[in-house]
Amino acid sequence: MKRYALARLGQSVVLVWLVSTIVFFWVRLLPGGPFQTMFGQQANPAVVEKMAAEFGLNQPLYLQYLDWMSNLVLLDWGRSITSGEQVTSILLQAAPKSISIAVLGAVIGLSLAFPAAIISATHKDRLPDIVSTVIAYMGLSMPGFFIGILLALVFGVYLGWLPVFGYTPPSEGVIPWLKSVVLPATAVGLPYGAVVLRITRSSLIDTLDAPYLKTARAKGVGSRVRLYKHALQNALLPVVTIAGIQFGIIVVGTVTVEFVFGINALGRLLVESILQRNYPVTQGVIILIAAMMILINIVVDLTYTVLDPQISYGGDSRR
Image (cartoon, rainbow, N blue to C red):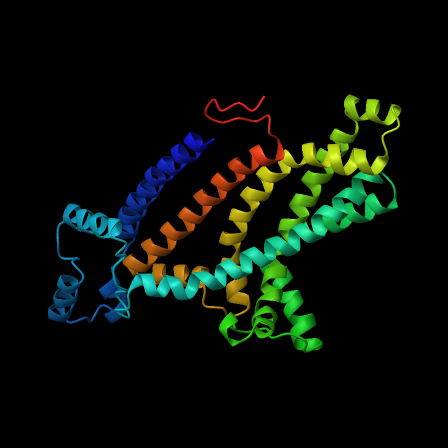
């Protein structure tokens, strides 16, 4: 297990390096450059040349790449071309907002999905199952930004219960912070919960029909014990995979929701930096999101061994 975890961490380093390399060359293939975008076609060549030298963009591409990679190893992500601010500082300001929305969205989605899936699976083809299925398909059919607009209109504009614009950091109080993120988190959490609900329901129905559970029922094992001790644990394995993948999609999906609620987080930062050809910021945001996705996948893989001790990695069998 420990060997497997170390191997996955080693693979993660290689993956982050590959993403860094691809992003580095991709942003430079985009038409236009940062200074043309900043100053327009009438830019003073002397000013452009001076700024290009300041950010090392007058160097041959391979030297820029080597300089970028050597600084990346030292956790120096460079400076924003438009503001001169350190990219690390910019990311530290934006990332907590996106992570807050994504994590709270996942909590909301899972909190709704698991009870609904259990009720749906144990009442298969009856009214609770039909209602749950209809709600799940509604969640699947509506994108996060549309749900966000509906929530903002109802709870922000019409009822006036929650703010519909901006972000309040936790340092200003947990309740104000929660009020500022609950609507965007719900907007990304409902589609996420709908996917998890459908997968959990299907997996749980298959598990409840398994022969070993029928045998347990014939031996008089109670329905609660069969459901919570045996069926649910086995049914969670595919759910963990989908939930992990979907959580990564939540992180990416916050881009549009951040725009709806006027939150300057990673999504908004990424779009603006691409439009401005702000190479260091674009590279920093994409690498950070890629690292988060890789980390989520590692956590999902390691969670398998917790749910099913018979699963082994790297020859460390627990049988």
